[in-house]
Length: 458
Ligand code: TYD
Ligand code: MG
Image (tube, rainbow, N blue to C red):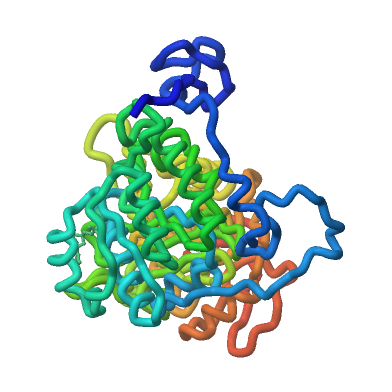
């Protein structure tokens, strides 16, 4: 078949190049030039009159008043894996496209095979197209699982046109592409995994999803920089982006929503990886705190907001005399820059000096802290370690710390405190500003880091 003509376009600035280049000659971006077909034939005629998942017309040319647009309650297919359904916002939306990113070996294929098995059991037709593993390898994996994946349709194919053809012939409700980096389309000459291929394949899969009403779930390996398949190009195309993460050595796996057109973002689902596949963890706070040893200095508990759900985690700190040279600052699960800021604030505003000390801070269970609401817990763990005084076991720490050493309230306090109460915590150390009344929990107001130090030292 004669190849269609291609252009090489920068995905950052849109500049066209006569041939592929490692660096865009217009804007200087590296690795951003991607092959694109010159003209994409859009199947508008066949699509006209069909409805999308949201009830709008695909390919229709007559605009409608917004108030006349018919709305239907969004249909959802439950996978029966509660944590997976939860992060999706209640289940899989028909006709949508979902991207699951994560490092190799984290459990993406396992999760999707389990979801596929459950969907088939519930009467949905699922096509699992695997370019990563051969069907017999998939079978070996399936045999380990608690679910019966026997009815799932598998395809060991990497040519996109063949996969879409098979999905159409099967009238599949859900199509899994494992992974997007292994598939290629005939319309481009470049190799699978290339940014151009990934973009074009994703675009074609999105059109297929919208036109057929099938849901397409694509797996994307996370590259070293943390982006999925190159310059994050995929994330704009799809409806929902999930990241699967966790320390491979630990059993916990965290599934997080970073984009969702059909639900809220930053939702967190927790699984544990077992001999028989992934098992949802319905009560993450209890699991994250299970290994906590009371009465040890350098430990502080806080409640993070993970999407709409509060989750309790333990922050641990250890300040130890530095052997030689520049003291080390090691932060696991926390931004090292945030740690540096908090150390400087403690030093200047509360006379807690960590000079000459190695400082190690970690958040347990592989959770990553990104919100400033955890500042006070980090500071408390640091001070507790330095003073060698354990924090009281029934206390959680809530609040942001400013550069002046002032402690500010964090958002969604009521839900955080309610979760703490549920797990048996009786006191909250943090800003008393606007602190809500939650039965069984008292708020001990702290306005400044100096007060934190005095309280922990007492
Ligand atoms: P996998 O789903 O292949 O990861 P990905 O698709 O993200 O690359 O997960 C592979 C890991 O999971 C591998 O180290 C084996 C482990 N595993 C279990 O512990 N239990 C199981 O039941 C299965 C199927 C895999
Ligand atoms: Mg895999």
